[in-house]
Amino acid sequence: MANLTAYLVFGNNCREAMNFYQKVFGGDLKVMTMADSPMKDQTPPEAKDLVMHAFLQAPGFALMASDGMPGQPPVNGDSVQLAIGVTSVEDAERIYQQLSAGGQVKMPLQETFWAHRYGQFADKFGINWMVSYNKPM
Image 1 (cartoon, helix red, strand yellow):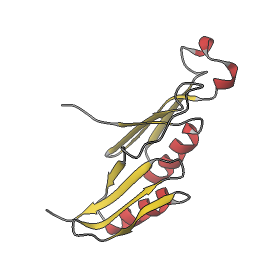
Image 2 (cartoon, helix red, strand yellow):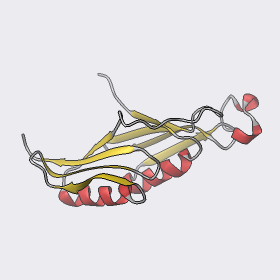
Image 3 (cartoon, one colour):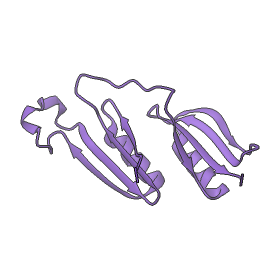
């Protein structure tokens, strides 16, 4: 059985973003900086505090991330969105409110023909999200 986990690349604020996501979703966050890695001897001094790998594991949820390679800034694209499925209106409203704070709302959280609550936004780090509490099909 395969497992799919989203992997996000940030420019230099991976730790901030992953701490933010941990506050929203809970779970266990592990972070390795460039200086903590076996590659520390090849890491420029200005990159030692960058995140080489972060892993957030919560019930039903996993997210990996890094700051990418020094000198290679990431480009956020609209072709990828992270979809969070919840099991109550209250969870949809809480997660939408927390994750969208400081970001850009693309579709306000609302009832649709397929969902009790559905909304889209880019969070304050430029990551695209969908929050959905689906109706039975």
